[in-house]
Image (tube, rainbow, N blue to C red; front, side, top):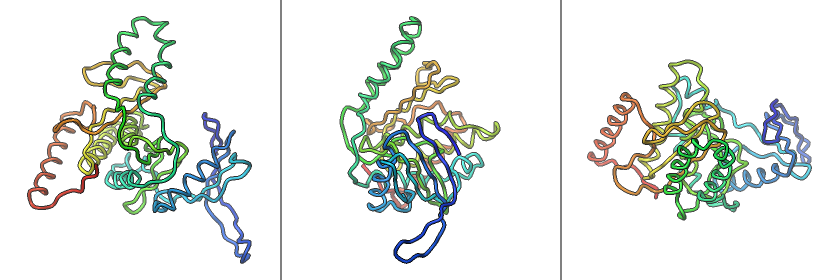
Length: 307
């Protein structure tokens, strides 16, 4: 049982079911979500459309919405939390990338997500009160916002996106993943999910110091695998509730509750997929991965590329 700040109440339990036609009884492990508005009806329509489009193994089965969408019930997607697997070093980045590419290739009738440039305008408005109070802050945040505006894609491909993808929305089972919480699903920039997911790297709750390398390796592998299968250039920025997220040129962004991730097709060969500052060990792993990839390509095996 959990109350979440975005005005929803979440409950997991066993639901007794009865078929009105046959009278057959069964039980289901379900999540029940209560909302202050009609979001449940919207999630049911989204989940139904995605499953009908061939993503029934990826999207939990909706069982219905009541009270004008204020109550929504879905069958639990049985699997292990990807967060636990990643912390233990067992996370499967290839399964997640495969799911993202399938989602990207699926066409369903969904509302359009705000353009990235619109998100930036909202972000600038949220910063303005703080900038009026602290003039020194403007010299840090101003260049940061300018750089995001310069990097933001103005127009491009539209694809189905999850809209709020982070590690706690991912479940794993038998080399497959399930994605939960489709509340923000929309038609938008096909690389938004990758950028938003990558931007959560330093927000993952760690059990111990050793988990840090495992988390970084997993996120780096997700980006590298996606990059190998869909050539991209990605800029990801996340500002955390605590601490500082550092972007290139060592610009320190003050702590805030606001985050933003931007992606666009890679502009030139050799551009890094993600603006992290990897450790030397991570750079070595990346070089080894590229070397293996090049070897496989020269031997006649090539990876599928989705553009």
